[in-house]
Image 1: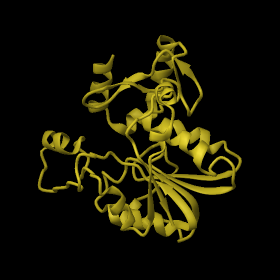
Image 2: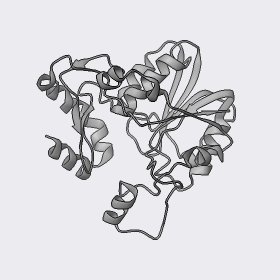
Image 3: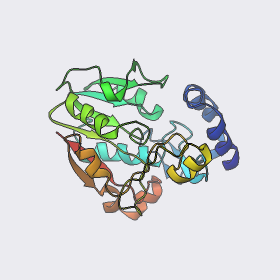
Image 4: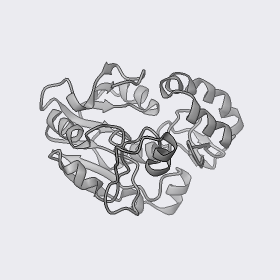
Length: 254
């Protein structure tokens, strides 16, 4: 199963996967019935989560019901326990919206929720993050996850998110990070897809962030808090929810 998933992720175009994968997963749910793990996004219980990954599939990663991955389950738990997201009236911009969140967030009565992306069929607004088509001080909250490693100019993208947030607003901006690196690595002269995949973890990534990620986000104007929320959770919860035990939440404030 894990090798089949890896093959599909590497060969099927992402927009196609975004449109059809949730239908296929509904069939798979029957094989994962149980109560060993729990998804913090959809609250469903399973024997285990499905494997997921383009190169080396991670075990116990993908919720077969809502398609939440480890990072999504961590983010939603963070929103529930450490923010006002589920309580206050908020205008929210979600860049490159994840399937597991869209329906859930659209149904929340306290949110004015807008999805946007340059190519995703799931987003309602077509948008280049280098030129966000909204006035400054429009949104209370912004989400932009696993985007900054794809964009031409991450500092410009960060400054645009900062511009459209209201004073006092906040954003969560996550990216793949190699914590063994002190600084971010990028080299536009590397064009071979296999070499880019080896160095940047995916062939369509243009950089691999290091421990300076918060500093790079701050170039857009943000005050960046590196919240080690998952490190503070009981070990039993990290295991039960299958959370990424080493992931830092990058909370960006205006």
